[in-house]
Length: 436
Ligand code: ZN
Image (cartoon, rainbow, N blue to C red; front, side, top):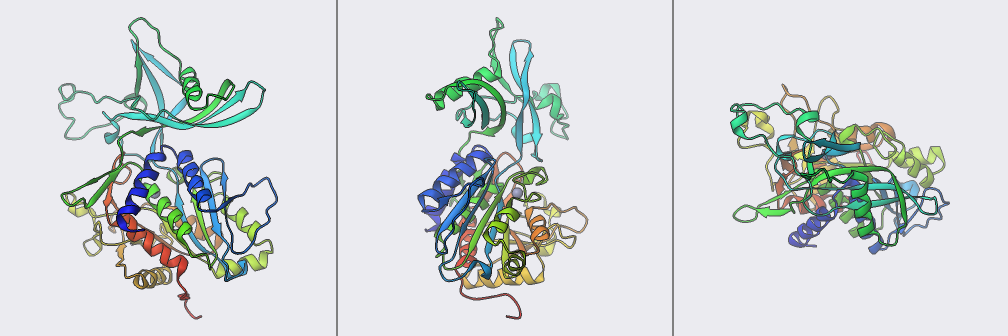
């Protein structure tokens, strides 16, 4: 796939991924289309070398793998990891808030979004709803209102003359979106709005009652190219759907001679402690089923390598003193190896060397990021997964500006460069591990 086709594939993935559940569901569709077989954790698995499989846990986590035709499982796995979630605002269980003639929805902050960019945007709602059906059974449905629906208006400058000098945003008081207005108190309740949406999306479902939901606000603005030569890509959720798309696409394009695996974790933005998070046992439990003998599993993991993919900070031209001068990261200049002495990233000199050689084989330049020494460094799922499994790991990512904004920016060459470097990892015949 060339760069342009790859970016359009990314755009359609971003548009379909209004929540982590939608992202996973869309990945499942693409994997099924590419011949992967859907496994279920509550069933026995009969697996064959040379075939491809995937499973979904709790709607938001996915593991897909190819069992290589030229190897056995004991030879280890070429592993990729990324996360399905993005910082956002999540609707509270008892969401309705009547303020005068307005109906508002109470939200909790999910992860660490920049609050400012959430104001004055055409937001919609998507997620999953758990319902009791007419026959008494429980059923989970994915919902997406898929149109501009809610908004958080800014306070006019005239009421806060210092707004441009420094603004305090209180999440409880200031981030409450408007969803409806009625001058005669004819306001709907949120569950009946959800029920109406379900009836539109699933006309055959006999929903008796909505018992619970995980619904998130998202920006309805579509991804776009920017810049005089279309050198930029602007979109919501580039962190980390850009990486999910690259990993999924590489796994599908893999020549499938070696064993490869993609772990798509949920809840990275909230600390990864969940049934589908990188601190949970999702990946361990799949590896146990692939390699039931503990000693053989240990040996296979020692022969494996993990590329953990999550976006990297590009140097911001308006904020020069936020970057280490020797490690200025630039858009469109190649994937970024992320390094931190406190192991906030799992990269070490061995794993970074392996990635440099892989990228070199594909003729791709790489960049190296470290945080300024006087600033705290973020983290990702790489160190958590490396620590759990004891697998050699490198943390990499596409360079990004405005990370954790509702609208993030990357270079238009970056998604394809990232994809090509990880496809090289899956397909190479060279064994880069030292001392072999
Ligand atoms: Zn991320």
